[in-house]
Image 1 (cartoon, one colour):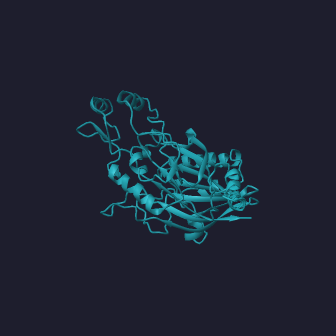
Image 2 (image 1 turned 90 degrees about the horizontal axis):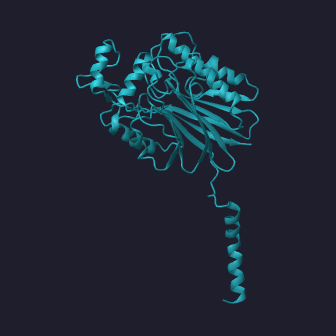
Image 3 (image 1 turned 90 degrees about the vertical axis):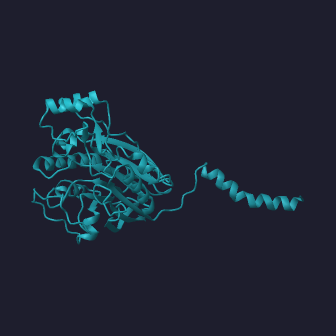
Length: 360
């Protein structure tokens, strides 16, 4: 090779060498201008738990035991759940939806069945199954102690994004009501999780995924109100970033029954630098929050359409002077999470929202 040819090769190589050096081994990520997020309760409790001889013992000592124990001494936990096959279908449908970020509730015993289809996503910490030693479970039931130190929450983000800052937080005792009654909220470690998702070199969005106390009775409502306070304190006192924030999950709330607007959204908006809103309210209810006051509002017989209010919610928060903000583009209930016979797979239909990522 003559000198002129050698110089030509060197000149062509310089830009590539500069890129390798400047990138410091990190893959260059294109600017992300739009994200789609979703949340759903995957109903991952086992159909039943075998109790063996302890089943007969419970029947004898606690004849009014509120959870069914069948003739084979199986404690019937979730007879209508999707089970293993339905959970595999949930994982495939999440893949088909191509969500950028999603949160799951009740991701317990069928975690692997869901995630086997999600190789293109990173996930948060998996805390385990709804199971345990029978003797230990029996003793905890008699002592009214929490059976399982697992939250059932999970967080997924496309692998191209960098996820960091995981915080796992159980609800304070006042924010949980019901042991073997009132939806059995105290059997597991309900609470919330926090994550930071770096979309590209400039834009990071914070996320919270949660699962609130279930039920429509005054004790359940009071428990959720305590959760609103705990969640607000976490956002106001512990999040130190200037990133926009998306809060999503199974709130078990209806605006006509729960003071979610008054005790949480209004408090966020009262802060000097925060602007908060509910995606469903903004796009599907004319930006009008339903009036609260119906404590007995029933959530078991809701008429569900693509635009109806759901127990699952997506709330987003922008910081007024931050360089990155989210602008809501659309929100919808996802009604096709069903099996081949049209049976609903998830506990509630998922809700999804699309956001534009705006930059100063």
